Amino acid sequence: MSNTKTLEKKKAALIEKLGVHMESQDQLAPLAARIYASLILTGKTGQTFDELVTQLKASKSTVCTHLNSLQTQGRVSYFTKTGDRKRYFIVTPNRLLNVIDEMTNNWIRQKEMHLEILEYKSAVNEEDPREPSMELDFPKDYLVFLKEAGEAIRKLKLNIIQKQNKNEIPQ
Image 1 (cartoon, rainbow, N blue to C red):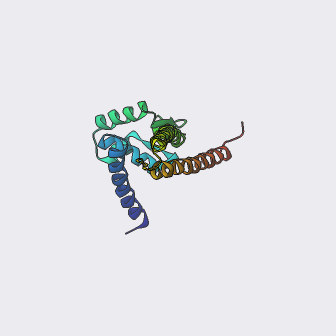
Image 2 (cartoon, helix red, strand yellow):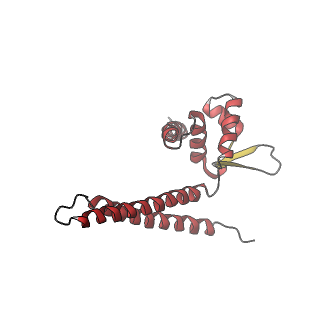
Image 3 (tube, helix red, strand yellow):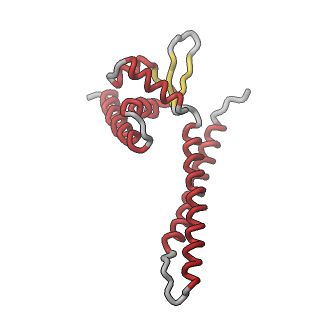
């Protein structure tokens, strides 16, 4: 079997695996998840509508419906090439940065909530220091996790931005 066929089979298996994951994780419809997975694995070159229909063995109307939905959600966009009437669909540029921002904002809200929980539990324990009724290790450990995870994701975001800036063409 040629390397190209091996890569095509691997891509098909990854599309399915990633699609199943995104169905449950991102609440996407099965075909929308496979379209999105396919575009993730295609990269900057993008895929045409017809390529998606052929690759995913789906009807044109169904692919169209899900592409429109993914575009409305801001997950997918397209570009055109001069002299070519086709649209090339890609994962929306900066989508990863948007996901990182959403994750970071969620962690900030969780941190604020767990700080309040820790304050409350500490106050309860101070009422009768001889018999503390509230366990404080988990909230403290979780706050450390949120801090470390937040720092790691900020570094990732900075690296992504720096790499994007290096690829910019001077105007």
